Length: 444
Image: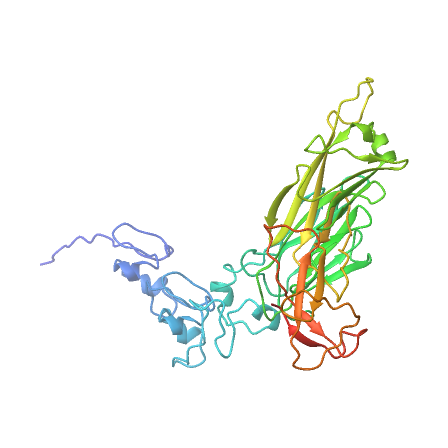
């Protein structure tokens, strides 16, 4: 007897590799799904590597294939892919973990650094850019500024960056000059490390007015419409930096302001006023009763600081006096360049005053419509604590351990100000207070 059995043809992977045949599959995923056709390994599977659904480091060393890591720090964090040591390490044993910048930005890790200066010194830890590079960017700085405004060091009021180099070009209004004042200044005490250069012109090739270091000079005038300011730091110590204010001010031949503790003197050129369509007879201050004296060439206001409507305020430890000059409208129907004349006048008084024995120090009168100056003080020695018998000899020679009785006064009193001695220095020579100084009082 013969038994006839009918056979249903099973799908074959021959010529179908990579396809899904319904009841079975010739795709590589069939190893994971368990539905490979009966001849899949005969026709389609050509390697001896086991197929796995896990992510592999093959061709991914130094990267993140997803779900695990093929980067060297995976040993430290325990996130290596299963075949990391097969493809990415020469030995199949874990190595000693490298120092990491994770949670350590801004610190030193011994053999490497997570501080921003590591980019300059070339000693950054391997993952510095992964964890710290984006969190401590170098802020752009510098630029061109016109007429008036403020600018500051990168990141202010936080600490500036290592190796900063910023250039600001300041330009005044037409036919005026730049007045620059640093309202806050805190740099590295090393003057050759972090400093500000102020140039009298449109570029760093212009004459340098000053190199400003920590606690240095803080107010400057340009001689033209341009001034250039450069802020430069090294890779060592950082500080909070600076803020600066600048504004356009009349050139000295057009107008200036002389400031002292005795008075404010405003001198305007008559030719300059005439070019604006005004003369001195029409000008007045906030207090309209304060009128100028008029000569052949100048119009001069001269008055005590606390009069004529002066407004006083304290700005960054400096006393600032402000006023305005106005003009009455012309009664002759004259055409002027300005519909309303208003000139801002400012005196910025430095907080220190310099007195020499038996002499009143002259203030630093480098001024225009915006002026700066120092309070005039007098310094006298007395022979006893009664402060009655004044010493009139110059120089005043004393012996060691002798009591000194000193009185310092403002030439014009102001009960709202506090006067104290910051520095008092003696010398064996009346003409040299630098070679062999002996400080009685230094920095308060």
